[in-house]
Length: 352
Length: 123
Ligand code: SF4
Ligand code: SF4
Image (tube, rainbow over all chains, first blue to last red; front, side, top):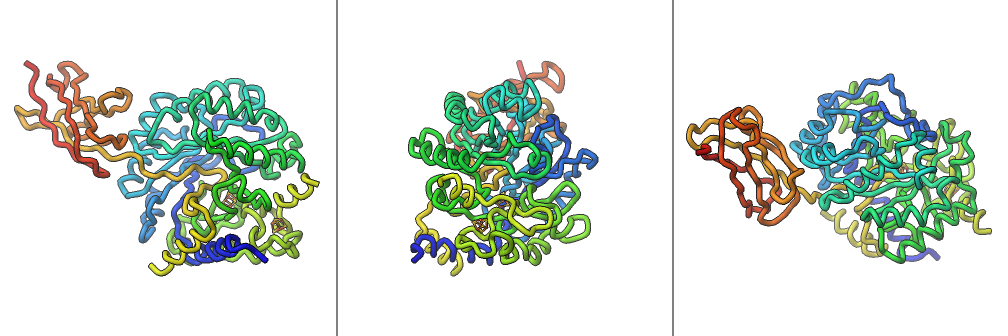
């Protein structure tokens, strides 16, 4: 018999899906980047042939939103958003319209001046990636100065009380044994929140075995997070990326729920309307240059809100399906005949 | 309304406090609004005309500052302190006129405040 907790959560997900209140919107405002990370291409279609999206085009799209949710956050993503020198103007325009905004950055260009100008423009949350200690971070970022720069950025961001700031680390073969030291480093820099994720095996990442964790290492990662969460000296968690079975209540604040297309939307560099930028681009539901953004949000997004189509391949006869629903939406790429990664299976195999 | 009630009951039953707090793997945490808007206009007490180039900052942290534009206007987001002290300083010498510095304590703690500031001429 399933527990009351599980039952309540399943019902809750149904209600959230039916309501599909948009409150978290990615804006892929540029695909230019100042680094050449070895996993690039695995999480979004980085293509610098696109021009940055003009602010006014984006504003026209979001001006269609009716009955805006409280705490609606627009997340600037890229490429590297800091390469746009009109970010502050973009931020102020969004705040003027009652939206909050935040940014995901590699930290390379995040200096004192930019820190304050972005805060002055109303930035309320920030995520910076740190992918290991010096050698492994620089390896991943393909740049020998990246570590030093990102540490400066982290120190600056952590000094602000009003910024909801966290560090993300993409866990891979090179840094899995450094996690404790990375945590100490973050504590020394006064960082309050740390999110760990693994990589989807697509793009360049698919052919690089150093980037994938073995099943055993994945279990080690779960154990590490579960153990560190007990000490409460830093808010460490596993990202939303997948359903982790018996670790569900140990590695995150709430159970797995992929909110792509349910609460999370996006406007991508070419105007496509979708959800998280790491989702296969063929799932785009419309385009801001031809469609009314909010009408698309309200009336389309069926594959996101009814995930029955994921009952295929190994998910077809899976006993965990009701809680997992085919894992994170970003795990469906290419011909979509099977889920790319089943975290639950990794755990089962890795614990055997 | 009814949906929200059901939502909250289910939230309670599944024993989690973080139901409405989420972030996508590649996204940021949500912004909970720990800042507030401070905007306004700076004019000359003598002529009533707007003053350009005045440094507007939150006292105690000199890094947060903006300068007034051609219309003497400024806009910035600051931390939500009670009794926030906002400084107005003439930092461009005789250019745009010479004015005495002024520090204003803002008691109002609402989401946004509009300040009308008149600066005295420098003696
Ligand atoms: S097989 Fe599919 S539904 Fe089952 S746990 Fe794995 S990803 Fe989830
Ligand atoms: S698609 Fe992936 S990143 Fe987006 S909410 Fe779902 S699990 Fe998280």
